[in-house]
Image (tube, rainbow over all chains, first blue to last red):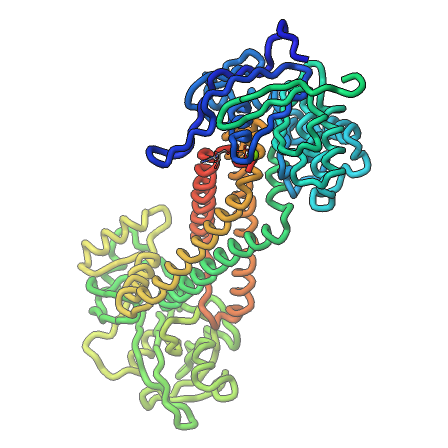
Length: 239
Length: 376
Ligand SMILES: Nc1ncnc2c1ncn2[C@@H]1O[C@H](COP(=O)(O)OP(=O)(O)O)[C@@H](O)[C@H]1O
Ligand SMILES: [Mg+2]
């Protein structure tokens, strides 16, 4: 997938990030170099506490980095003022979390509509598009359910629909299967690959669940604050 | 996003009701206590407001209405001659003992009205005809006098009792605002009043007056003061003077003031605290919205909308409950309860301020919030 002639959707260079101050300081990212391309599903693996979430937050522009440079779709994120970054994020990125993070008071359809509402799209139109998206993730019969009345797998599917509803160029998933059992995890990854992966989109999935490794196109290993290894994952059939 | 904000607010019914209860309780507490306080204050100046005359003239050193400082009887004519005065009449007021047929003694306030006009008479008469006090030995009572002296079986129209060994016959019962001291009021004419009381050098308690239409009351009062050397006050000023005296000299000010202030602080603290906790609990949801690209401005607007929605609802319910309380307990005028728009406005402003403050604190938290918490 990583055709070198194609510009990277995400381009991280020498990214450094520390937490704490003075004597308690921990450097989590010690110089990350990573390119992620449109059309691919990149797995980011590594030991727990290794900084995967930190790197995702930095790529999403919700965490300031100490040094280095991150370009997303050619935009130097780290140079953007925070309000512009927030708007950029709303327009180009979708998020999927381990804990789903649905708004408990909103129905499935309303939850999916939220990113569109944030973009100031009218409620009726936002809900219409949300329903289309929910149909695509197989929840056409659960539109008006509250999150508490959905199973974990169903909630994560709502989250996927929400992440995809405004057609993001970047889909950022942090351990999307960690709160699910094996079969449900497989289903979610299958869905991410089928619905999420697209020629003009890059999908980043953080995981340490080896049972879902085969859903990725490439796998980057984050160890001791650096990307130590990137490997292509052979696909059975056509990818 | 207003829709999302309101859904977040109403969505968790239990949390919303708790929040609403906190605010409602706070508002109810303050409005109820404040109204009782103001009701008491109204009682303390009832002996002014019950007469309903615009200008009171008396000794310049007067501190409050129940402390009578007699003035020379020539004062009536001197006030009448002041430019801009439409009318001026004498008023007698003094404490006396009444002896009932059953042998009981009661302290009463004897009020003597000018016989020609009966200016200062109560607006509402419950029994009999008030004008009948012009008949020989006739007097009128207020309903509190009936109550204090043993109820309608003991005192009613036609009852005869003694004032200083002189006969008094009840011809009417009038309705008045209860007074602070709740001393029964006996109405008679000015001329007869001074015959009931032991001889004193000065018998005139007050001159009641009115400014001519179109003449500013303040000017007339200034002229009365200047030309007669007496003290002259508007009804409102004299009432206020009396209230201040009561506040300073009875401990009601300190006691009730402390209660209200505590109620206010506690109530508002509850209100602020509950709303603050509400947003703190929703912080992760706001973080998720921030990660999805919602601006701080949008989130701030959402929080403000939530704060003011729940604040105004709590205000409405709280005022409603306090009013219902007042209506039920103070219906007959037996308990002090005066809910004024000033109080309601004050509570509204205070509540909205608290909502604004706690919303601002939450917003500040939100500004500092790392949207990265959503990944935790
Ligand atoms: N906001 C923060 N403040 C302080 N330390 C943090 C913060 N976020 C992450 N860390 C620390 O950075 C390290 C990497 O965390 P994280 O990126 O969550 O790891 P992973 O997602 O790979 O498990 C951990 O030691 C964590 O304690
Ligand atoms: Mg993590």
